[in-house]
Image (cartoon, rainbow, N blue to C red; front, side):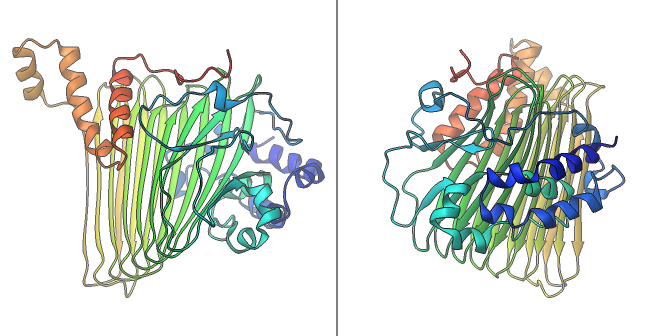
Length: 447
């Protein structure tokens, strides 16, 4: 049996159960998603955007699914203690793929702001989900998005009305928790209306040392003049497989900062599709990857300049050791009429061993004349002269190497607005390089 057939059979045999434990707006798009998935199947490595990750192999194992939405008896607010000191966030949890709605933060949200499960929001605010859900994440364009759309039963809604600024960052901890191998299909919908502002931190943690397979689809609407910072931090374990697709639409004069940081994982495949729909919009998309052993991290981005007078900046950095593999494929598309586009795309990589492998493919596709666009890529090892200089001053080779590697990735970390998060990430990076970073030390959920 090929990998996709088990999911086709699963859906056909359990469609009623899936629908009965979900909400109408999610159920309404399942048929289209199912047909798209059945038609496409998992992409082979001959498909350009999937050439560096074998998707069929990732989805071949027979994972369990919690289709009846059995509630796992745990209170993450008691069990999980955030290790980021003085971060002062509004803290929420998604356990596997379900929003944890008990014991919510007591901090008052501005009028009209919604942070809730998709299922509950579908009852209280059906017009929002009907307008925004599954509108930019097109299942016809991506098989994993199709699979997620046909199986997802719940998720998270973050809605900020126009002229509203969230008073503090919102931190969402995605906890993977199960006593047996589990597939999780998580959905996130972010809507910022005109001139709204939000700073979001998503942390992926796993609290059980068993295999997990996570598909995640994030849809983010950034309205005219709105500002969104979206930070995604993964710190799971080597048995975790994560496939995340992020879709962003930016309107005129909006600003997005998207930071994706992989500190510890098994296999990770991140895709970002960002489209400029209005002039004067800007984005800064940054990535930091630390991988060793046999870990694999694949970041694939598309920045689509559909209109003129927009600015995009990308900076992705990798540090690979042992037999780790990394991939970065970034495409910047400047369409006809998108004059005065400014775009910079950079991928820099350190490969510490002869067995580690990095694939780098920055791309520019330009159909407009009056633009300023550039891209660059480097793959290499640490500077021998710098290493010699530091060793001559009494540092061990291991210490000198760790200092240079930390300095290398700090360029990405320094782009985060949250100073306490920056400081904590520097500490986590230090632990990662000295081999002492494992699953989240602040969690007591499984004890």
